Amino acid sequence: MRGGTGDSGRNGGVLRAVPKVVWLLAAGAFVNMVMAFTFVYLFVYLTGPRGLSTAAAGTIAGVGGIGLVSGNFTGGWFGDRFGHRRTLLAGSAVSGAGLVALPVLPTAALLLVLPVCQYAAGTVRAANSALVAVAVPAGMRRQGFAVMRFAANAGFTVGPPLGALVAAHWSYEWLFRADGLGTLLFAGYVARVVAVDRPGIRRAATGGGMWAALRQRPAVLVLLPAIVVVDTVYRQQYSTLPVFLADHGIGTGVYGALLAINGGVILLLELVVTVALRDRAPLRIVGTGLLLVGTGFAALAAGASTGTAVVMMLLVTAGEILYKTPATAFVADSAPPEFQGRFQSLYAGASTSGTVLAPPLGGALYQSAPGLLWPLCACLAALAGLAVFAAARLRSGLGSTEVARPASPADADRASRGEVLAAAEGERD
Image (cartoon, rainbow, N blue to C red; front, top):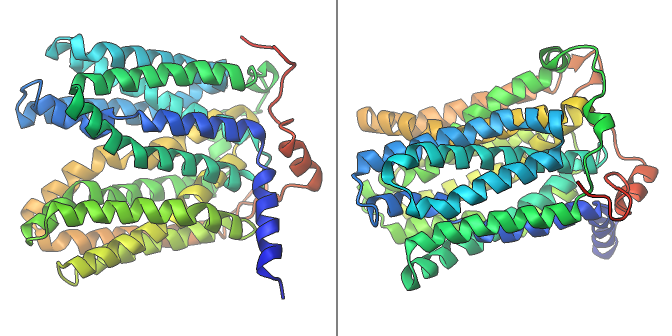
């Protein structure tokens, strides 16, 4: 029987084996997310200081969201073609400069500048994921992505309250300036801590194109649309859920507490759970997570109360903990090296698609048939989970798609010394 001290030490060793460059990227992501105010306060800024109507603000925010999702879907091509580090730096520079300038731009210009900024931010997210995938050997990537998610979630937990203080004591304009400056500082930081791109990997021959690579990995072709479906369901918590609660006399204080529960549980448990389950088959973990998301929304069909809302959030959070990191790592483990950026980009786009799809689809259904929304959400997430369970049994020409090759002791040792993504001292673009 293994004692708690032994398990704790073994798990600590697993995290210490995560390459140094990933920890450095995570530190930068934390600071960057602390200053990422734009997403949270954009609508309030447009309808407040800018004086726009709700419809006009929704149009601008929606166009920006399309830019973000498009950047996630296509940004990996730039990384595979020009290098992930170079793509991250360029995307951060464009996004940061645009956000700094945004407060002084005329309203009409926002329809162009905001989606460009958001597109660039999407390419940064895809490049960041690809850098982690390149830095960590197959079989250890769940831990690497979990570290990045922990840092980003911790930063986002601090950011919105800090943004409220900035808006209250200075102005909403300073939120965008701070966000833009933080993005530019992140670019400078990455330029210092991440080694230059290795052109040999970028130019490697594949023996086929991107679609050929995907066809050889049928489990990935099942996983990606399943993630689109579940992300559309998952993000109802940010669109129709607060409306549903308000319609049943449950105030914004309860809704805020639900989001706090989500963030707190993720920060406390996701890294621990990811390490504990690191040797388990990834797609079965993902499928279980999607089923839990569906079960959470099914709880709302039982009636509107604070209790059912808490149960819903706990189940959805448990599902999120189970599916998000293993799914990201599975796509990375499945990708050919020369397509790592594009595979990460496809997953990043799928996992943010709900930001565009969830509000209009959920809102329209809730308006026309409010009693149907939560049962349908539960069914869609359950079907997505069952599809992923079925995909776990698929095989490709590369062997089983279910279990990634465990990292060898040599891989872990090299990763712990940061040798997977390394360059000579002082070598920079």
